[in-house]
Image 1: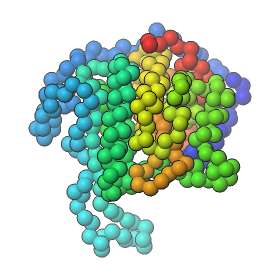
Image 2: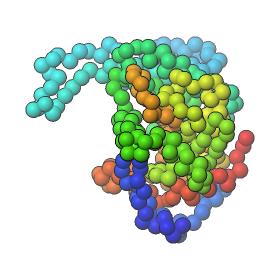
Image 3: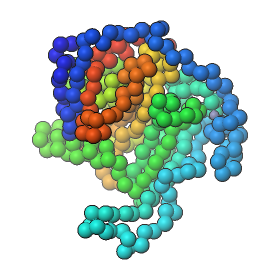
Length: 343
Ligand SMILES: [Zn+2]
């Protein structure tokens, strides 16, 4: 991979450079020698606020749920009853300092009553069921004109900042549209204007043509580490047919997406010999209005770049705003494609 040394690649969705300094001396590691054993976790934990029947912070008791279970977050970051900000306090400092109330709904979505499973362990049907529950949430929220966006995300693993292993994700429904989505909408608009094509269709076509960064694929969905990945094991997972949001996905399309997603996370786990941490987010269009350029997809951003080695965001990323990567997407995709995984 000589060509990978000191190469920068344009990130078309973020409109920024990603710098790759791939070291040829970084030897391949073996999962056997670097394995961090997962802690023994019981199927039911009496101290877990997400397990069936347990009490949560304000004393609300979870029902003895058997399936996907959704509730309003006990410590919501946004609220429908957020207090009004007096008009005189909304804008100050020469128009630069603005405040508004933080309107929205925050929910927790438990994937499974069992405390010790992940989406890699459950059946593909169960993963599709979870995605179906996401779809229902988005449909419901879209009927509320005060809600502009629904961000569904999962922070998985202690390395992603989550101490409770109970399989769950979160939903933030807000009156504003999240920054990455705004960026993608703008990039898609620009690409259409410049090239007359859909940016996501072009990315998928490029990845299918190059083939080397594709990690999993079936009839309805495809997963790849994009050419312009910022994280070593970053993954984009697309339904092949374009949907702006989850709302219009059919059951068959959801199942295909679930199968490809599950293959990816099983490959992750097998490759590292551990339940592999990641930040997953659903990248869909805003809920109000028409967004014919947007193509809903899943984004997985794992913090690990090697066993026991986290990609810390530091000077270039935090200070400067551009990512520096020391592995190439092609190498990491090949690694994940090679790994024997549990089907
Ligand atoms: Zn639990």
